[in-house]
Length: 325
Image 1 (tube, rainbow, N blue to C red):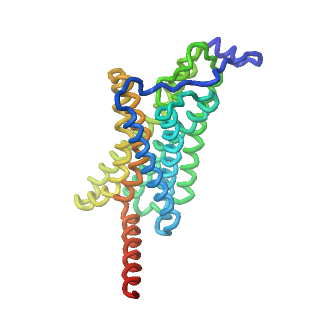
Image 2: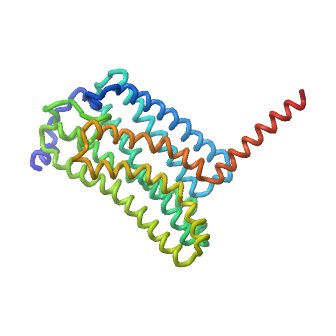
Image 3: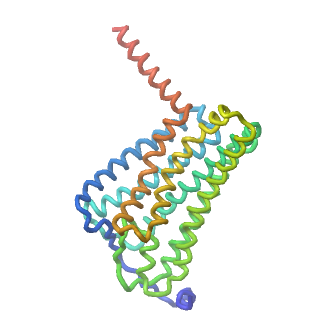
């Protein structure tokens, strides 16, 4: 800690490299096919999330507080994959592994922010389902547009502040060991370990960050569903309980897609080979943003009704044009 504290002085010059070199996916055969797969995932993610955002903006039936969180999730997914995947393809597929120091920190900021906001967005949707099922008569009072906007904004501010702390601490380090980052992007943990001065504050942050961003949100979501199940068993018939719980299926699928790969990676980290860990983490980063819009289209009755209505209108226009001919 003494070196870090002294580094906060005015006359200390930090040694920052001109660039970092990203070197993940080393020694994996046919890895270019994986990059093509990532490109496919990216395209589907962009189209799907953009479509969900447009549908919510245009359809007045999708203006409930719940869809404020759904819209934000689509925006975060779109922003996150746009920030991550093109640079991954540029680094590995087109062999441009050098990233300037400041660009690397910017890259880290956007990737961490979007990945973290996915977690908190799932918390907001879990709260929506909790109130809708446990307090259905008070839902309109407890979950208002103002409340949901405030909740989402608070999550954004908290996540941005947490990521900025990570970035700021990296700027207080001097790098004289290496500039090679063994990851698929500018990973905080991989970068601070390359420093040659005291990086204990970075270590503390790297330990606290998963707890605050990952474990606490997951604990809240699990407790909310435990409370939902217990309540439905007491006050509802089996048919009513299944009908109420059916409204949670879409959210539960999103939670499973996001958290299960994270749990596997973190709990088996010591037993996973570095390349397998990098591929698993990269899939965890890009796969949920691709599947989220698909799940909400398939599980949300309002969106399915809208798609059916648009399809019916197109058929009607086609039949009208044929009859006129």
